[in-house]
Image (spheres, one colour):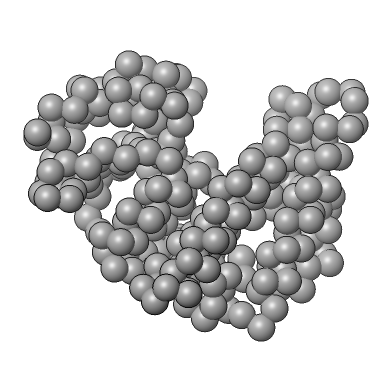
Length: 233
């Protein structure tokens, strides 16, 4: 099957069908994929899936991801040389790490330890931080009952303390080298501070290690490039 036979390419035609195709937006989950691609140096072509025009609900996008969430990819050079369609940001990170041989340790103890922290992000950080954003910065902020907002602010603060303790004596979450665990976690931490403007309600000033690690992460050239992908249309 050729990449141009995927229905999604009817809405987002590839200019470079030999490159990996990324369908995304610069949200925390979307940034996982774009930052990963920049860090590993794999050639790719980015397509902007605009929430403003409900692109994620279009038949073309749903043909690739029936769960209507970004990011999603098609790798024209997948296993066996066949195109590989894939969605779910955590699965994409693992796939790209194994394809490139980068950012996921190969030795079993560190391999599973890295996956452990990736799952921690997927099961805890993403859902909880996202709900914090909804109740503190977006539509939910107008709900008069304070309990939902407090629930997610408290849980975000707790998770940040878990990460802070993990970073004690470490450069990165899984050790001294950047891994997919960091690429999964830090875009969400960045959103708490810069997008949700919630630092003051999650105990940011009491964290010893997270602020410095976030700064190191954001200083990386690959991260800086990934933050701008896909570009504004």
